[in-house]
Amino acid sequence: MNWLWPIHTGITFFDYWTLAHAAFWFVVGSTLAATKVNRAIAYFCCLGVAFWWEVFERFAEKRWPTIWLSPESWYNSWCSDLLMTTFALVAFWGFDKWRPK
Image 1 (cartoon, rainbow, N blue to C red):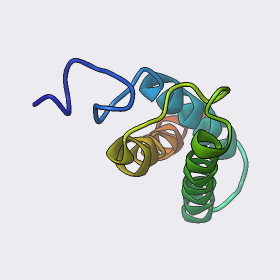
Image 2 (cartoon, rainbow, N blue to C red):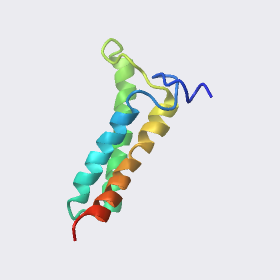
Image 3 (cartoon, helix red, strand yellow):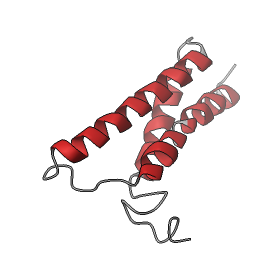
Image 4 (tube, rainbow, N blue to C red):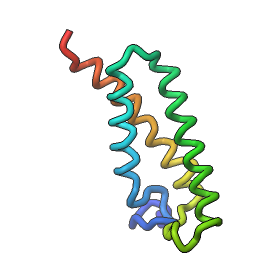
């Protein structure tokens, strides 16, 4: 289970940025939930933004290795980080559940 624990950027499924990703998508999801935007469209737009951010990160790791100092493992980039986008859905659900009617 070295791919899971202890957490180490570039080696494990989760890294030190996992909580930041989850919090970011929770804020984005709850912000979008405050609008009348269609949730499915908003979620897939969030997923698209997350995907293209990971593409940019892969480019930046190779282009600017002196600036981009902690390259991620492929399963962290393409699985874990994109999975964090589901926190936008959690925020959509939570916002509706606890919003005053």
